[in-house]
Amino acid sequence: MSEETPETAPVASGNDVPPDRLSVNPRSEFFDAEKLQRGVGIRFKDRVRTDIEEYSISEGWVRVQAGKAVDRKGQPLTIKLTGPVEAWYEDLGDNPPVARKD
Image (cartoon, rainbow, N blue to C red; front, side, top):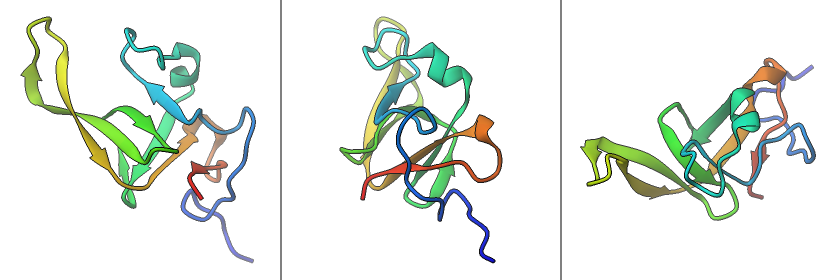
């Protein structure tokens, strides 16, 4: 019997997987507090990351804060990194369905 992990869990659709694109910035059109409260886990290039500001699964990129630098309005500067992105809801336990690009 093989045990499913976020790396091997099947891709699902519906309410069990996070949206294709999500941002933690309230000013963004992709911000959704309800989905963020559930806790979204992100794996970028086979490494679980906790510093993601925004991601897009279908386009294959994440935005992370660029050090402690801020713009003139006090918003953190971000850089876009490209690569494979996977997302899942952390409140679904140890073997959640994972959203990824096939």
